[in-house]
Image 1 (cartoon, one colour):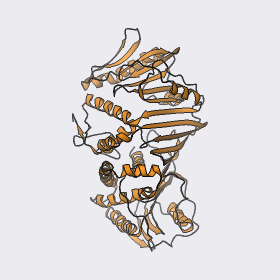
Image 2 (cartoon, rainbow, N blue to C red):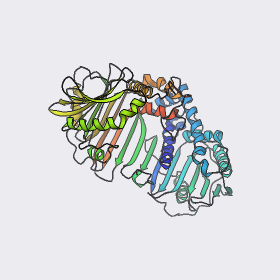
Image 3 (cartoon, rainbow, N blue to C red):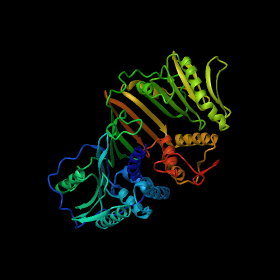
Image 4 (cartoon, one colour):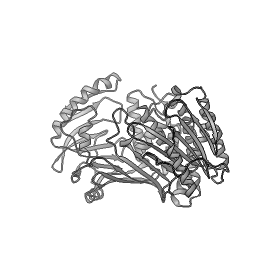
Length: 536
């Protein structure tokens, strides 16, 4: 899992680029260029990860409404404070991750902070090749002005030599070799680009970058209108325990649309996804306005049969609906159509009680019971926890179908939202849909997180933590966020999301907990008394 964590670290470094506040000049050329690379070079192995970002300095000069909107958010005081905190943690992470494999005790955090500033300000590419057995080569290309290129050339070599190894100068840069494979670091300057390579003896990917820059002045083809592009070939990455082979290959692109960010991409599976998309079985009698969010998903039964998270379920749902109420922050409901739901709840309830009842009682967080309500329906209930929430799972009939229904608060009376029902019914290839008022939904999720963390005597995020201050600062701009995932082929899902900051309410709250974790970026959601409040 440590290897998987490093992959997440690489990805978050890319996702953070659109949140960082600093701008630096990107013009200028370095007279030192590499002429040592032979041409043509052999083709490198296939890429399993690719990343491209235009750079925040470029976006600051983009006159489109979307770019200017995001630049305004990025330059705010709250964004700058969050970036400074996050950058400091990222700068300490490399030494923390690799300290058992390197010599020396200097983490070089001040230098690495400047590296991260450069990374988010200038245009950059990351490319990784490999297969399910190992990663073979890493390449990073940065479009640096000459003064920053010189800073990278001297300081990166100083760090690597301090951590073990000895560098050698070569035209346009340097190389450093170690005894163990992968053993080869190399930094080269070509035109406006600084290219860092790491891998085995022959750095084919870096050689290919150099060739392209000599030909077209860029390491890869010019991007489309996207600000950010990411590709993950999950099935062909080295497989940690539990494997990644069932995950799809993923491509993602980010750009701006008016006062919104828009994500578009594809998920490509090895096997057909959702062979039979059944018509939507909507809970028309229990889904009532006023709501601040609605989520609908279908076609996942085969996946759920394989991965039951330790439960033994004879039947599983193929559709689920989640919605949040507007009257009270903890109003969240879930409904899933399921044949013979009562029998399924009896089995599920017994397993939940066996696995979790002693745990919650040990924390003095109530107890879990399976009982019958006044209408004769079975109810799995978490009792005697802090006020405001009454988690439960029960069964009900809606439109002639059995449903499993769960909630954190009793359902409310209202009228149906017919527009949503009509929209879903008309979208025959729609697999996933989510609409929310993000500011209100983020507040709802924050409330639920805090209640449950309090119940288990875990610290909550302090109101003055940088992440919460940032969420509060943009909350008046968090309008509607809409996500759609459609089946475009038997094994391909296409998705698009449009919203003010590109994240949903629950993702914002999870992201905030992650950024505030003392073990960031690898150790998620653990807080300490220094960045949380409440019980230690």
